[in-house]
Length: 171
Image 1 (cartoon, rainbow, N blue to C red):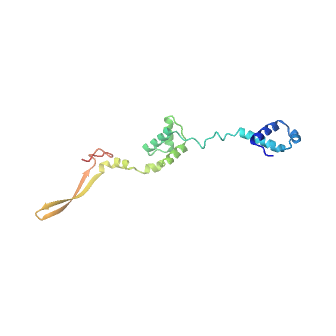
Image 2: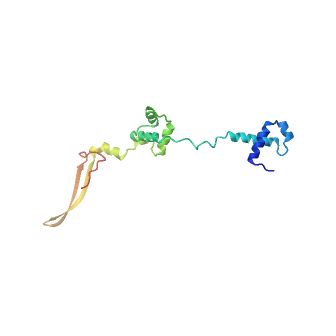
Image 3: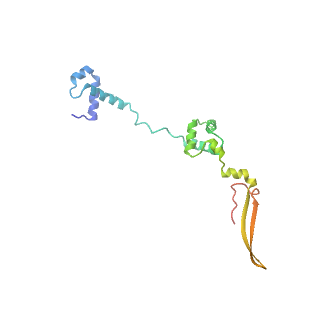
């Protein structure tokens, strides 16, 4: 004889009210151990909270992630603990590993590596006074000997310009 889940639940609930001795005398279709096992499963299902659980830990809020990225990009020498302290100053408590994971997820290296590597913008800002622009071109000139090619080299200093990132419009 096969029972449905509903029938098993009803039998298990009634069997639990009886003692084991009475069950051995009354239960003829299934053993008392089976009835009690059904009851244990019924109770376990009642207290099972797996349906309410979401997978994994919730992500860090996007505004906090943006703040961590901003601190790391604007302050290349700051490590995880320094960023953690700056976040605490503005009222956000984050663990060191959370900050490390955020930076890793966005492809930002740890502070020692970040401070060793110089971006082009930083390089240009540091060396703007020493940067020279050069240009080489040819000019064809008609002389009494005929057409002569002159090679011209032009060098101009960049320090009289406005700085890195400034582009003059072409006319």
